[in-house]
Image (cartoon, chains in turn cyan, purple):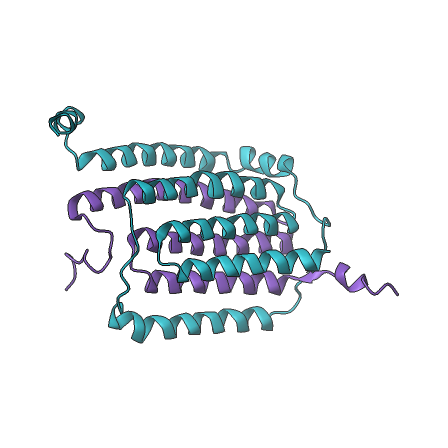
Length: 176
Length: 109
């Protein structure tokens, strides 16, 4: 059961990631990225991280990807024109990718003492997570909330700046 | 012995780590190959997700809750990053009327 689930959702992950590379329309890439994120949520659940699985679905597959698809539709982004890319990317980038993958694989495979994952053996409950989060790590948590607030203000400021102040923008659209 | 017993064997943690490494490298390939600004940004999100999978795997290995909380912080920072990044993409599209990374080359040497 566990083996089937792992291969099924690992396969979904890899297929979604490869499909993201192959599709030329951004909306198709966004949808395949949603497949990757939901499959990763199932993998988190198999590793016993139930709170993170829920947060992955809500925050990533829900909020962030809705933002992405919304921007794709807002900007009316069509098919991308295929170009060769830069020479540096081809000459240095792809050998570096292969080298990184090979290095990570050898390090992982050489290391000893990994335990196996048994389904439902070690589930971290939300209570355990929140106990540590709200006692030991309360200050980073509050700093993160300030960060998100600043990000909201920055996003609003950046997205409205190009069109001047709101009243001028209103006049311009009314003039059309 | 039940022929289906091998299905209940524990899965080695290396497989999760190898999956994470593969997803990360696919993210880098997307970053290098894709020519659309939004898709390049999506590749960065894919790389963040791959690293999150590593964090959760190691948290399972050591039985540590803090590894999972770090993933929670990464998610929050990714949400903030997505909001600001997409606002920048909208501003770039207003200024240049294109999303192709080949045509946004004002800072190129």
